[in-house]
Length: 554
Figure 1 (cartoon, rainbow, N blue to C red):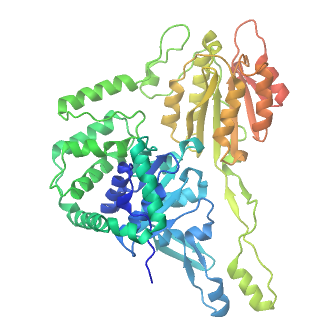
Figure 2 (figure 1 turned 90 degrees about the vertical axis):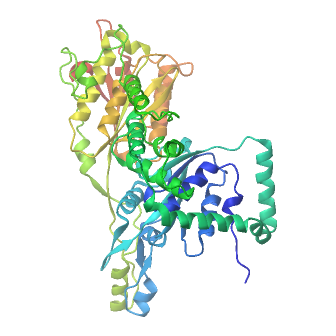
Figure 3 (figure 1 turned 180 degrees about the vertical axis):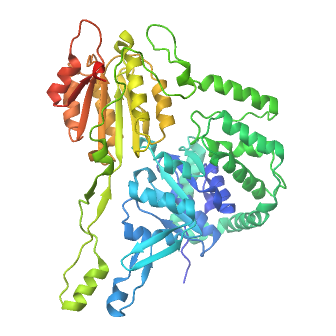
């Protein structure tokens, strides 16, 4: 029988960074996988399949669909064996099938929260506990996680993003000759796959041999002290939280040295692989310099600290935060503000609530079969699925120029800061949406990292006009792939919409009704201050039938 070939790994053009990252993960699987971000149709899936073929038939390649069920991912009871043989047999799930191979997820950012949590646990522990009716067993699942995504379709949860050891940005080639060569090679492969593969067979075998030798040499690669210091300097310069990046820089550089048959890691090797490790973890990525002396590293560190420390102007248009905030201490708002805390009176109900799944279609196999064997009549018994909610808080902040009056921005920063600090033990995810010139922008995707969300809060600036309609639509984009029933929205605004269609105020009302009316709780927080008030925020709340509060109430 003629073997079935996939497109050869070595025949793929113009995606050398992703190819390198995949190879490095083969050499050292503990690096933790690759996230490929960017354009569609750039051979990402083809590349992973090709690498699986290159490594041989015993190297698994498992594609995990974003709509996969829990039983499909974790494993399920074999119904035929249970009925006919009266024995309990477990069919392997996708995670178990991917053991010692690739687990590939296209559009990983659209994967539901529950499956993401399973992936996090499995990638961290090398397996998972399979709990089914009458079954409790440990399943080994050590895999190289490869995910692809288009950022325009939604962001990836920070917890999962950090689990990807390396990250690569994919772009469509723009060189005419390269594009022509790629297209012609694909036509040739589709017409004669066996003959096309034979052209690259020697290259495929050479790469495979190079990887296997590198795996053997990995543990004897030397890591000089100056390399250790270089990696530490890079993570400090880029303000990367935790130690995962430091470890991954060393692991990835070591795999790179082994791949190129070198006895020890050089500074140039670290510079080569640093972007793959740091660009998806750094708050603001700074590419490494060719110079690696300690003096230069110290200078970079100082320069980075100067650039990344929140600098707030002392003019009348912006509130000057006290030094305690700069040092990460609790924010103290001006004395005129009474209560600097938003009353999240539905938060406890949301964070603790559990509710029946909308779809009661998962069969309780053992109970159904036992009932059938007992009565002779098959009457399906379904599981009572219970899902736990995750509380999500969205702060929509009006950062238009009008918010600079009477220190309005200062007050709301204090409120947001105090609110976050007031719920330290709750599992809450926060996000911030702000006005941006004449439109709006997601300033921070959902995160439970309070340091990260407060850092964004510190850096809020006032400028531009007020387009509340665009801001409401941006909130919709933030929430569209999530469970909107577990979300609370707080809108900080004076309501003075002045751009967006012919009637900006009415445009805001129409946009909210169309896209956000299903949010269970929205509160308009009126930031308007001064003797003469227009009351636009109150009008907004009344027409949309939303909760309404004013700054002085807090």
